[in-house]
Image (cartoon, rainbow, N blue to C red):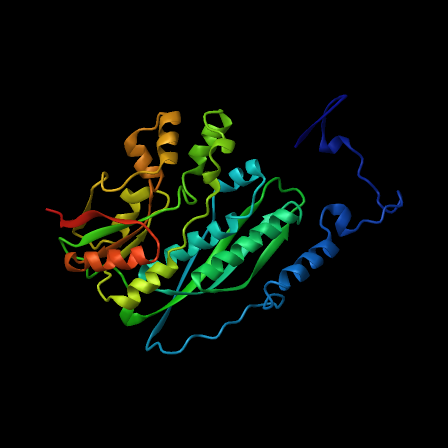
Length: 337
């Protein structure tokens, strides 16, 4: 390891080790960069919002009414969208993004969200961390699940924030949605996204650093990811013919929609079936991004897909619309030759 000093280059071995006792230095954790008292105060303040926090492990009662309950878990993060938070100095929505990225995956198999755990690391505990936690709480409330616990770590030598989420849901074995019932001619419904959600931000950050786009012109870059748990819960309660679901994240529709289809079937997508939001068009224009690349990187306005039989298409779209979400028939399933 090399250190550049005003009088030249020196290696760590060129320095005399510091004798703390001889120099009269009493080392504590705060001097090393971690303030235990501030951390305890942060936790106590947070417990006012989440009374269940504080134990060594979170506990939750397993819901009754399941014949063969299956637990479904998922973990995810928010990627480089955190960089946009730092540019804007706004961390009020990123916690909701974290919840959404996890719960939207778990519900694709028909699971009902149960609880959420979070991990947040930071150089020091500050108001931004509190904003992140408030966002996580809001996301859990929207998804209808408990924030059961987590870890907030203070890393004095860490330059940026980082976070991860862990979600668990429950579904009866007989009600698992695994795509096996999907058949040719089934229709694909695309449900609107709120924007970029939490994917494609490495490309966005590349444009930001080269002054091609500016956050001040596009505050929608921090619009939180839509949580689809409420609309999925209603769909599953009102119809039995939801045969497949896909959360459209990194890889876009081309890589995520096929994940819910059985072997031998593919999806034809009509890319003109919905209006692509302007923010995607701006990114494509400023970066001179190829159309196929845009489809692989971004959701392009479709955040979640549902596969239903043709005779239930209209009903399903009405249910989704009742939840104040836009939706379109964006494609059809066909058999590969």
